[in-house]
Amino acid sequence: MHQSKILLYYKFTPIADPKAMMLWQRELCRLLGLKGRILISEHGINGTVGGPMDACKRYVRAFREYPGFKGTEFKWSEGGAEDFPKLSVKVRDEIVAFGAPGELKVDEKGVIGGGVHLKPEEVNKLVEERGDEVVFFDGRNAMEAEIGKFRNAVVPDVNTTHDFIRELESGKYDWMKDKPVISYCTGGIRCEILSSLMKNRGFEEVYQIDGGIVRYGEKYGNDGLWEGSLYVFDKRMHMEFGAGTEDPGFVQLGHCVQCGAATNKFEHCINEDECRALVLMCPDCHANIETRNCGQERCKEVAKQAAAG
Image 1 (tube, rainbow, N blue to C red):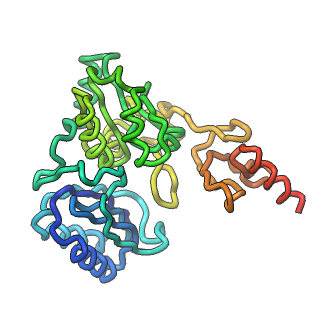
Image 2 (spheres, rainbow, N blue to C red; image 1 turned 30 degrees about the vertical axis):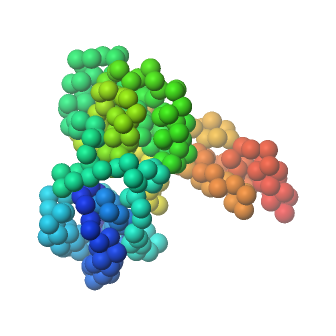
Image 3 (cartoon, rainbow, N blue to C red; image 1 turned 45 degrees about the horizontal axis):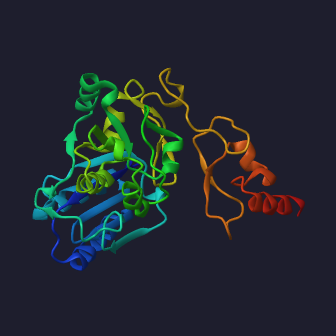
């Protein structure tokens, strides 16, 4: 049996012809039998693709042959093509949709004016040296933080990346503007942009974690400053570090919206016609039609009606 893998990567670099890049990437992935999602803009590329190990290796070699992509770092994760419904390669105004394509500036070295990159050990060192002065700022959607986050992190009230600029300009976080702020996200890409948006809005000392939560978790498992599980964007929905939930250092953060039981699994509300909510739900509550809902009154009513047949 051939071993399969999932590749996660991004590269900020000027792309003169995003459409030509899209056509090349689509053809390359098809030839290699890879599935996944790739977004391309004039600022760079962001991809998650999966398939057989040898195909992934060939993809990395071909990818790095493009001058602007030389030296791109790839994260290797468990999984394969079966974790994605299809191959999707698209051109967008932004490779992460913050709603500020004109504000982002990139050159051959990456994002211009972003936060200082810290390796995982440098994150811990900064916290040791500066203590409670350091603020961890979650650069993901608030839902993702329900199952895992850095200890005592500030979790902004955002449902999508489009909400961040409004949130940063709301005044809620002005108290952080003269503190050391470590922005963090899954693999690092959102913080490349978020840290520059923060600096543009008066946050003086902004950092970002090299490789994001993934790299930090690989280094420290459950023995560092990270707590809980990591939300991921494939059919696994979440992953754990170290020895997982059985690890003595694992901190359980996620709980079922219905009964409060420990769970890290997000499920869709039964009222999918009107409610697109993904909520934490334990297997028992998800198995019961009457409790397979997000907790809103209208959705509870839909679940009752479905249970009644």
